[in-house]
Amino acid sequence: MRRVILKLSGEALSGGTGVGINAKSVQHIASEIKQLYDTGNTQIGIVVGAGNIWRGRDASENGMERASADYMGMLGTILNSLALQNALESLGIDTRTMSSISIPSVAEPYIRRKALSHMNKNIVVIFAGGTGSPFFSTDTTAALRAAEMKADMILMAKNGVDGVYDCDPRKNCNAKKYTKLTYDEMLAKHLEVMDLTAATLCSENNINILVFDMNVDGNIKESIDHYEIGTLITK
Image (cartoon, rainbow, N blue to C red; front, side, top):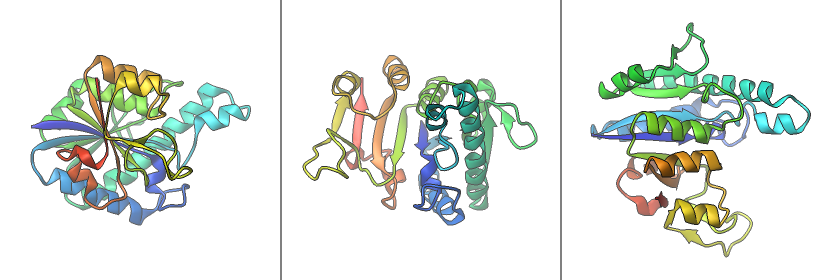
């Protein structure tokens, strides 16, 4: 049985607007996750960003105290996680949202051993609330949870980008796509796949990452076996 952490951007839940939660988009993402779940051979954990609701770093750059801005972002991830949990459960998938920030009325507290127990029972676990501390991105959350859950891989789902390029393919039609990279190469080439903390965690714990386009139907299911759909990052 394989175990993966699926990293979703908050913008993916917005329906293309980049802002807010679009119920149809969330339901579509849930149906894509169900295709992977229905294979029966993969345990799934999910980390969702909050860029559709709040960007702590942007707020801090405009004068807000960074820790407060980051805590607001963590609360945004809880909103997105609850929306996704509801959509998954409507499809008959047993799901738990576990939050690093204590909010027991709506989500279980994150306890590593409890999360492992859920995943061993093939319950989808959504890790909300970031790391529970400011100054860390949701990419770092995904890397940390992958290490704690002993996941085989992080599936980094992107909006409209099918892998890692040497420059922005939306701005340069001659951008070169990488099919495979090492963490050292990613850092040396200054490729903005994830922040340094997340990359270091993945490298030190031998966690592979597949960067792929989630907007292609069926790609979440395909990503587990067909690495050619994106860019594979390894140690």
